[in-house]
Every structure is written in structure tokens, then in C-alpha cells.
Length: 173
Image (cartoon, rainbow, N blue to C red; front, side, top):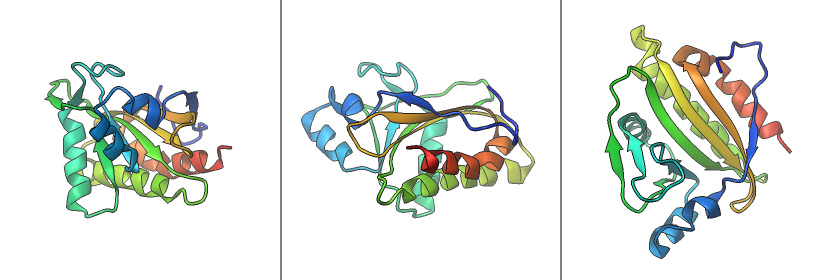
């Protein structure tokens, strides 16, 4: 659903958490991922371990994070990564599970601002405004329910509402 700046940000409660996403992975990988702040969830064959794949746009975004030397401690939530390329003109930024404990929810700000900066640097600054798809799931405890922001719309709009998205997550009980 496309939103304009006046719409409320809708967050959906889901059962997704660090346990549900890591419990079928190898023990070593599960322990490593449990120490991360952000899990990058596979978009293709979502929820399945076999054939779980990431879109190349996700990898480009992760390269961007690394190039900015941000303190985002992320991990790919799969035992074996497969990268896919879809030639449809949309930007598939994937799904992310962000750990933002109530005592210090700063990762919400850092992650969403990084996403907004990426869209600006890669597209809007160059006069492009592609359609973007992404899901951001935020948990306050690693084994509890998450709140999900599911976005499908243009890059400029996501940039404009990013501060509202941050506030919506922070104001959730």
C-alpha cells in the first residue's frame, strides 16, 4: 500500500523473532546470529531454509552500510546464501529483523536512517525515484513478538516518512 505523508504508519504484530528465524540453522550460525543487532531475512522462499535467497539489491545496501563504517552489527539469516537478480526495475531491499531493546532502542534510528541515506545517495540525489519494497521488523526482546513495517512505494516517500516510522516503532508498547 502506498502512503503519503499524512497517513499513519501501520505496524503489524508478528510472531517473528530471533528464535523463529534461527532455530533451523546450524548451531554455530544460530549462536553467531543471536549476537547480532540486525538479521537480514531471505526474501525468496521466505521462511524456508532450503533455497533461501536474497535479492542483489539487499547485498548492495549491505555494501553501502559497510562503506559508511556504521556500527550496524548484522548477519544474513541463512546457512547458505544465494543471491538473485530480478530485472523488474523495483528495488528489493528485503526484510530486516532489528533488535532494539527498550533500554536503548538506538538501532531503530541508526538502521532506518541508513536506509534513507542509501536511497538518497543511490537514487533520489541522481533524480531517480524507483519503487522500493522492504519489511522492517523490530523486537524489544529477542524471543518475543515483533512489530513489522511493510513498505511498497517510491523511494522519496520512504525517505520522507522515515522519521515517522522511527517514532512509530519507539512509541509502540
